[in-house]
Amino acid sequence: MSTKLGIVYLVGAGPGDPGLITVRGRKLIESADAIVFDTLANRRLLPAGARETGHPELYDVGKRGGDRQSVKQDEINELLVRLGREGKRVVRLKGGDPFVFGRGSEEAQALNDASIPFEVVPGVTAGIAAAAYAGIPVTHRGMSPLVTFVTGHEDPSKPDTQTNWKALAQAGGTIVLYMGVKTLPAISAALIEGGMPGEIPAAAVQWGTRAKQRTVVGTLASLPQLAADNGITAPVITVIGWPVILRDEMNWFENRPLFGRRIVVTRASHQSGGLSEKLADLGADVIEMPATQIARLDLAPLRTELTQLGNYQWLIFTSQNAVAIFWEQLLGAGRDARALAGLQIAEVGPTTAGALLEHGIRVDVIPERFVAEGVLESLNERDDVAGARILYVTAEGSREVLPDGLSEMGAEVNVLEIYRSIRDGAGASGLRRALENDTVAAVTFTSASSVRAYLDAVGEDMSLKAPAITIGPQTTEAVNAAGIELLAEAEESTTDGLVAAVERAFA
Ligand code: SAH
Image (cartoon, rainbow, N blue to C red; front, side, top):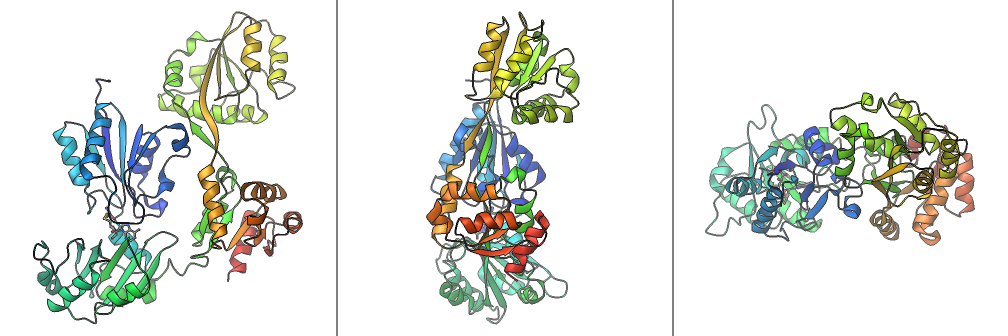
């Protein structure tokens, strides 16, 4: 076991919209050895491919959709202490803010008791965010000069309740209720009995800030029945107070043109040209068709080699991804391109040289054919390969033609596998489920090949379940050939043109 103590960051994940995490929170997620997350933290915040590679380690300690945790608090505390003792950088990712009804403070106490260093990264709490996304400011000058956050976890009709509901009823201002769907009838009754007028406006916001947000508005007296009639279940924020009427003027989120529409984007996210972001900004619930993802492997061996690059004469990259991850680690170690000064550099893929040039590095060998054999031919013509030490930076399980060939030429090759390409199986089944349930409003296509990739991913039968919106005539031809219904075609064959077509289709 390591003698070095780790550190645990209690990080607020925000209320659900993945854009509502702090910059610091996101950076810590990117550099974590382990992430312990619960129900209300959006899964989209987790690093791509972590589940498949085990880097970082993921611990799911929550249950979806409910208020109860499936793992007991004691066990979570013990897990955090154990990971800290193992010397890991741990992110404890909690919905909203870690110290607002999140039991983060109990975790901090446990860490303190065990002398494990910890830090707290606050988050945007659901009580403020869900209200804001429902068009309700929690305070408003002249209308509500104070706001109270209260847990509905305790039933006011039980004798052991710690909340003075009568005092709350008389304090005035806005009441924001967490965890209070089941207890809402009792709480409403207690507040009215305490002297709060039953006609004060009140709203229940389910899954606030997510694309599936739902809001029910009534009064303190009527909301419990309304919420039940509308099938509102946890997680819900209930807001009681006069500012609720401002929703009539401020309901920006649910009024976005594509709010509540589920749209599939069939390009890989890193090359989607911002299509997903643009649709999401208009309120769409975007599902990206799962593409191959790049998952980092354990990078400790790479970090070691970066400290001893002087041992090598050659550095070979097999892909753009290898260059990107190598560079990220080089910069992370406080170094830059000068660290490669004495090295000869070669690459295999055609886009790899471009990626290197972006970092100010011109490759020494450009093969005529961009396959391992081509690189070997080119290197074979040189007299500085035999006897050289070569660092070969590549993906897991890549072909061994090149390292073997180089060894035959008398070089000493160190093969460093730093990432793995994985198919997102979970993403594919999620997409099929959405199609099966008829919840997809449209599928966007940006090329004939994206139509083929979609057919591959979901199968022909399932592909007929939702209509298409295409970027232009050639893509439309492919859609027609596949027998998929066409909803719209972009007037201008650009990402913006496609976005406009989606907007028009649902205007
Ligand atoms: N630490 C969290 C709260 C944890 S308690 C925070 O600061 O937001 C869990 C309760 O938070 C849920 O029962 C629900 O009342 C509320 N909640 C969390 N996320 C929510 C969301 N997206 N929409 C509505 N309520 C939410």
